[in-house]
Image (cartoon, rainbow, N blue to C red; front, side, top):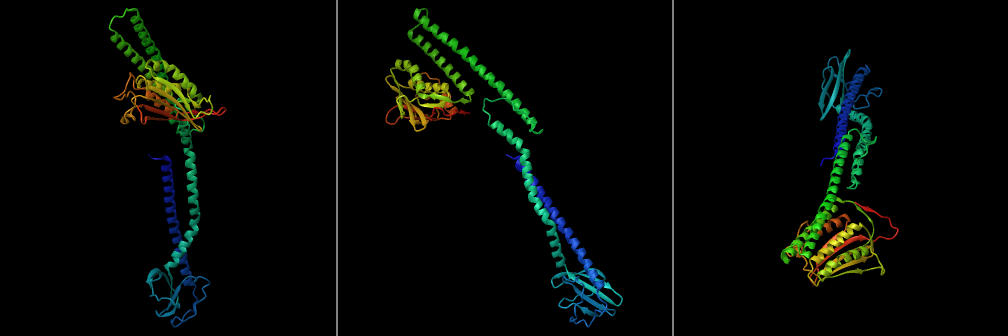
Length: 454
């Protein structure tokens, strides 16, 4: 995924570096030309300023003339008389042939020389200088000229980094505002003066999307409420009518037929309840955490399902392990309704899959500040290959007992996910049955602040 920040910084820094390189080349080229003009002027000045009495046998042993500082650099002076005889040559310098008047380039001793010749009244003067001297001076002038540019480039890069970060800050603020929102928070984003004009269409599009999501969420919640009212009431009434007709004899038919009809009606009622519960859990994405007593919820759910357990001659009980006191409430931060639904589904599922005369235990556990609970049954368990699939919706294993809907564990998994709890299933070791463990609760102390998990 391409980053706007990296793209901007890359091209801006590359552009500045390229511009600085072009400027440096131009400065060096200009300094070189200026140095060449300066040295050409120096050569001409030396040639026309030589004293008229500077002559001799040309053996190179003559005293060097006083040129007033013009010949500080390596300068070779040669003088020919009117007959073309060399009468003067600088000591310890290579000899040059007589060149034409004006400026010329000569190759001597592996070096390139710049010469200037001028015809005077009774002599011809020629002055030469190495090109390397000009190059050194050009480099020296360029370095003196480029140091402000060398300072300017890093300062400009830092300025670009700050400006780009400042310019993209509204996008980062918008991202943070969206990431910190809860799923149920669908209010439109507020526009203030700090939002740039370029981002305003994006914010308006997001607000339009949030409005449509809010409408869809409201429609879903309305549908769930309407479905709960429209489906539960007719099914409950149908079951009551079947029971009443069976008692007064107005419903004719064999006893097994009536039992099958009633069983199917019960299964439909259970399925509708599970579907509505799962839809409610899917729609309820935010968990409002309040102090909840797991012990009280466990006692209430065990009491509600005790009649179902007694009907199947199943021993249903609640145990406490690691309690701090005999009246330890096992208080945690959770959603009371979600905990009741989770524990109820686990116990109901255990009862449905436990044969007559079996046992279902709800065990509350405490270890330091961590709290959890297990639901252990003595049923047939679950094959190892199916343990990872039982949380899928509508999945029922091949050995499943009872008239379940395949949604109980899916609801449990959804509630555990909302509470950020751990959930594990494993078969009992050395005896039949299944153990479902829910862990990850944090014990709540009186007076501690209450948080909200998203």
